[in-house]
Amino acid sequence: MKARKAATKKRAKSQSLASDPKGKLGILTPGMGAVATTFIAGVMAVNKGLANPIGSLTQMGRVRIGKRTTKKNKPLIQEVVPLQDLKKVVFGGWDIFKDNMYEAAVHANVLEPELLKKLKTPLSKIKPMKAVFDKNYVKKLDGTHVKKGKTKMDLAKAVMADIKKFQKDNKCDRIVMVWCGSTEIYIEESAVHQSIDAFEKGLKGNSKLIAPSMIYAYAAIKMGIPYANGAPNLSCDIPALVQLAKDTSTPIAGKDFKTGQTLMKTILAPGFKARALGVEGWFSTNILGNRDGEVLDDPDNFKTKEVSKLGVLEQILEPEIYPELYKDFYHKVRINYYPPRGDNKEGWDNIDIKGWLDYPMQIKVDFLCRDSILAAPIVLDLAIFLDLAKRAGMGGIQEWLGFYLKSPQAPKGRHPIHDIFKQLVKLENTLRYIGGHDLIDHLGQDYDEQ
Ligand SMILES: NC(=O)c1ccc[n+]([C@@H]2O[C@H](COP(=O)([O-])OP(=O)(O)OC[C@H]3O[C@@H](n4cnc5c(N)ncnc54)[C@H](O)[C@@H]3O)[C@@H](O)[C@H]2O)c1
Image (cartoon, rainbow, N blue to C red; front, side, top):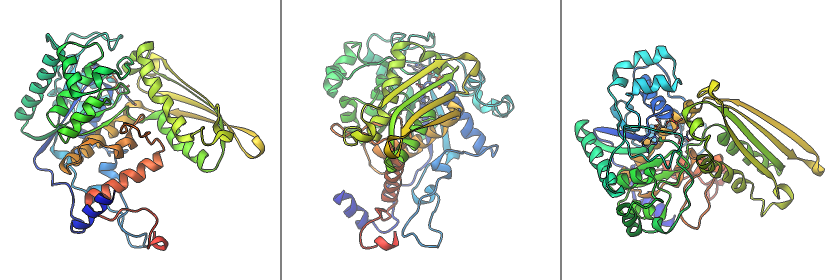
């Protein structure tokens, strides 16, 4: 931190750590289903002036710079740090289905047909590349648009070749990759994940513990391409790929987009804790009927999601240091595949809390949300911020992007931060740091002024 403060001081005030973005940025998504198409069509709609990029901090968010005075000092984030212009973004990716992005968006049934019709020409031009896929990792899906290779290393090389071709064909200056593919089965971190050497041997030896999402992540990170993981499977959250990210100065972030019920949890739970209110139980259940819901209907794939969702409350409430308030609180998460709802999930939370003299109370949350509408701006912000981090020379895990993630990747030996308000402070201060502005820590000589 001291080194960072010194580095900020050394730079002239307001001089950004990141170079200006030049040319086009390519955003590649392994997985081009509901989330990816809602994201891509959404950016196109915004660029045509048809809709607003609501939910995206890179497009609409502001950050305070300097002291809390009455003068307006809350510029847009894009005025504080040099972000890629949305008009100079191009899209591509991989899927096990051949559908172009118009067909895939129609199938996903998230956006209104009238809106999609207006975007039909540019959407139809985007066709998925052949995927690295193995049914053993996503049991409910079958696809034919799949690469063949003798070894997993061959497949990684094929992904690298795809990326190079895409970059050349689309004349992109830089590329970022965001995993929007299905949730893979639960895999525990093992010996093959511990070092780059072991991992590369595993790729050559077709280790079963290397899932397709790890192959894409390896290909990207090896090429110095920033990588974010929007699903709960391990992907880049293994020591081998964290080390590779450091070695190649590649920013990475994961896991699992923070939308819906987990977003609500990380907003509400910090409030209960802040007011020393106890929690006896938190029961979350939801119904959703999209392809993601179908994939999660398989117990092995659900297990990955469950682990990702369950960690949140434990870390925020810290029962081990607040036993009177949270010891033995009961936390249950259910996901029910219910086709009639499609992408329009309904999530119910029953929260049993306790107050003064242990008196019990209940809170019910009924969130009629839209899964991909909540996820799309996260894909955009992760891509735009990862590109910023790359230009700022920030390789390795980008903990400040944990704000967007359900199960934020943290360095070994450190627990992740789940509280959304703490995550926001971290994100804002990182932006101030990159932008060459003083960090706001609410302390120090200027205490009265903060
Ligand atoms: N929508 C949300 O709110 C939300 C929130 C958090 C996480 N996620 C995660 O984001 C991911 C995408 O969600 P979605 O709703 O778009 O699901 P989706 O099923 O609509 O899309 C996923 C796509 O990935 C493709 N795919 C699967 N394995 C692949 C592979 N190895 N290579 C290339 N393509 C592959 C599938 O064919 C499918 O088209 C899921 O893992 C989901 O759990 C979604």
